[in-house]
Length: 259
Image (tube, rainbow, N blue to C red):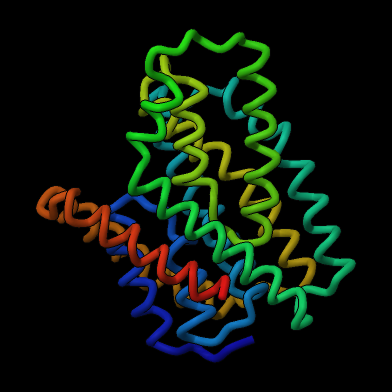
C-alpha cells in the first residue's frame, strides 16, 4: 500500500482533463502513466484502474439509462462473452501469480498492444467503419449476435489484463456490427457493458491483492474535477488537433511497453 502523494492526484487531474476533452477511457491514459512514470507493478496499475472505472462508468450508465440511450440486448450479448472470459482470465492470473515478473511482462505486453490498437481505432475509426459497412448487405441477425458475443469475450480478456479496450476498440466494432443503431445508443450500451466487466475484473484483482486503495483515492481526488473541467472546455479545442495528438501518444507509449 502506498502513501498519499499529491503527484498521483495531479496525474488524475491531467488524465481527467484529457478524458473530458476526448472521451477516451481513462485506462488508456492512466494505466501506462502509473507503470511508466510512477513505477507501479502492471498488475497494481491495472487492478486499481479497473475498480476506479467501474465506479465512474456506473454513473455514466445511470445517465444514459435515464435518457433511454442503452440497448440492453447489445449489453446482454457483450456480457455473455465478456463475463466468462473475464473469470477465466482472472483464474489464469491467480494460477500464474499476479506480482511475478513474468506476469508483469505479460500484462505490459498486452497493455502495449491494446494501446496501439486503440490509437489505430481513434485515428482511423471512420475509414474502418466505412470499409466494413459501405455497399455491403446487412449481416444476418444470428451472425451479428455471435460476433457480438465474440467481441465481448475478446474485451473480457483485454480489459482484465490491461484495463484497456472496452472504449475505442469496442465502439469501433459495435459501429460495424450495428450500423443502423444511433451512435448515442451504442455509446450508452458500451458504457453500460463496461460496468459489470470492470467491476468483476476489479473485484478479481482485489481478491488477488493487486488493488492500492490509497492510490485509488488519490486518483479520484484529481480526476473527478479534471473530467468536469475537460468536458467544459472540450468544445473549444478542435477535434482535428486532439485526435492525432492523442492517437500518436498512445501509439508511442504502446510501442514502448511492447518493446
